[in-house]
Amino acid sequence: MGNWERNLLKTSRGVFEIFVKGEGEQLCVTHHYAEFNQTGDYFAETFTKTNKVFLINLREAGNSEKAQEPYQLSFLETIFDIEAIREELGFNKWGFSGHSTGGMLGIIYGIYFSKSLTFNVIVGAAAREYMTFSKDCIYNPKHSQFTRMQELNETLKRSGISLEKRKELKIERTKLSLFDPEKYDELFCLNISKGMSAIRMDFFSRELQVYDVTKKLEFISTPTLIICGRNDVQCPVLYSIEMEEGIPNSKLVIIEKSNHYPFLEEAQQFIEEYNLFIKEHQSLLS
Image 1 (cartoon, rainbow, N blue to C red):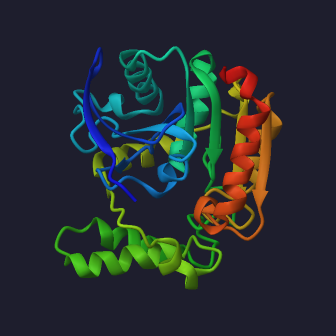
Image 2: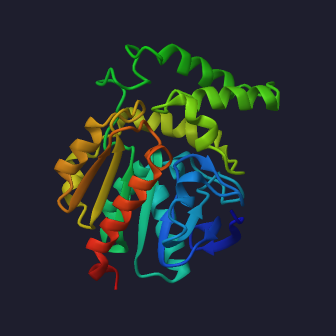
């Protein structure tokens, strides 16, 4: 598994750190508050056999541009940054794929800039705040693992924890979002490490409280593939079903034996569904 090629791209909205790998149609992948490096990302790695993947560190992540104003960390401003990156790279269009909060960015991207997208892949995401009204969500106080998830997140925010302890807590946290936690070592076996931009995470936590774009889903005109694990505890499957109902040219695939990581938990089915979707829309890509 080779490393990703690192680039610093100067755009009209500042300098952004981008990692590139793979061959084929260009595909943009990012996450709302992850910090990537040359080891890449499990989700992005999924597409490197079929696409030339551009993995983006957003503003305040890694070596990318800082935010001069807090609002520059919002969903919409982030999409303006991604559009500036696309323009600088010289692409009329590209595909977008996002997992979790990356998928939420994909939804905003589709609403405002479908003309820039050949296709859109939204995995384990939601078009509105997903905690308050869903007891199946691990961030809802009625969920059996809510308290433990909160403890893990709060502990991980502290600075004085040893690297070993931090790793242990992160593994426990990830296991809460797996269909079969026993498979953790088997699923997360590559030399991939990524960080988190605390300032982006904090802004997201606030913006999420008022996030609801369900009434704008009809403005997404690009072909959209929605994938969700049947047992997703972070963004429960009902939010993916809702997105399929709202997005005109969309297809929903529910992966039965999966929680929040269908691209790892049922990797073969995930890739087959993605390839089928791309094949169906090949005429749009040529």
